[in-house]
Length: 303
Ligand code: AMP
Image (cartoon, rainbow, N blue to C red; front, side):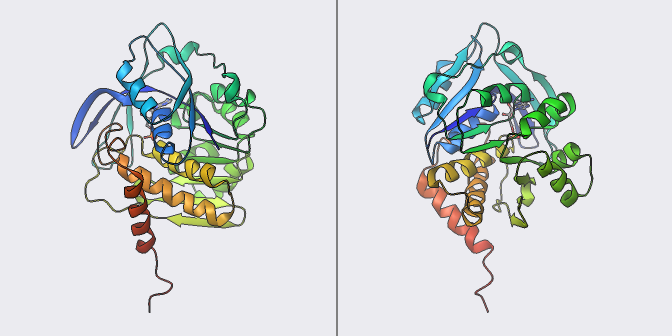
């Protein structure tokens, strides 16, 4: 039932029209694991530098996340700097410093190798594959990536995708990866790379899931205040895969429910910077938003 995740643990510096922060806790693996920890056990694989404060380690541990696979290397922690305009759907990367990730050699602790669920969060696709090769017999492998890796390491990414069951990426990245502007055609091309299920993240417009002969559309949770969209995608994935791992059921009905739990989790993250909002919530609030999203799209029984 435990999920193994590999991804970035980062210091993010972010500017949105509503505020600015410098070197706050971020990274794909942090958002994913914190979100998934509301549903199931999570084991994390990543690297940080000597500058990573104990306070962040304590927080991840307080969420019951297994950190045996979090290496500490000499050097600096990964850093990302980004900015958003009023269109919060598009992140503009200003700086990416891989730092300790450049020489990272993932070595899974023995008890991680039996993981049933694996999430390859956004990180170098070569590292994603190295981690996957050390897992004995995963039941479900899901993956995320971004334009940075599609541009820089497409071949490695396609090799990784051949072993992936579910790919969750942004709309623009689906088009870029497929080299095809039409989303439905692009989804077919990407699914032919390996993942039977493709989840297309569309920011404030929600999510489209392409499966075998079916498409499911889920709206985003309507919020009056969206403060910072950083981490929304990873938090979505944490809720989505977390729910699937907790329920151990991958049929179409349950996949749809999992998509809505992912949507709910992402709606919390965007309300504040960093993981600040996820630090405040409890499971009752998650369930309450789940019920409200259900009502939002329920029209079949209303005359
Ligand atoms: P998202 O959920 O797509 O908004 O992801 C946001 C997180 O991705 C930020 O916290 C960044 O630290 C992290 N990030 C940005 N660029 C990269 C990259 N090239 N590789 C891995 N993680 C990244």
